[in-house]
Length: 224
Image (cartoon, rainbow, N blue to C red; front, side, top):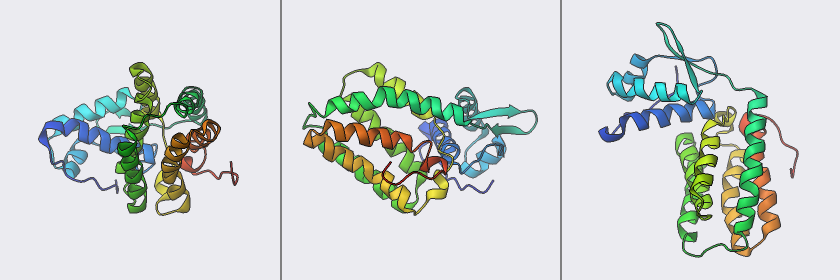
């Protein structure tokens, strides 16, 4: 396995760190479907004991990201086009109208924090740091949805996002497509602050649609 993993620094969050890092590698396509990983091998790469790695892999198994292979470790599972289409459909049905409605009443207080997160996404894309890019992207959208005050909505969408694979993302490193999709977060905030509900709706629909397009390694029509 060629994917580099940085050693864990904070012992209190070993399992979470391993799980998030391996999940990011799977989601982005750095660990492709069919790849075999072993607990001892990952423990060495993360410079930790086998216990947090095993716990992390069991969690990833429950999320459907890996499946156990007797005496070998875990194999990264495949994801079908139909799976992605269903996830995209659900997210567009839920997220698009909710975020569109925020354009009519976008509070002032969280704007600076959201701006900082949006800039962080662009910076991570520019640096080719996919793990930070994905984590920052999830945090940005989670915090945006939290403005609705509906915690169940936030949990539901976060879970849908955690199931989503972006298998072509690693191939977008240092490309115009990755830069553009990262900058869409800043444009979204511009539209929300301007109260442009129609613009928010169109951008959110396109942004989520990248799951089936750029982020899966597929071309998208210009201006789609």
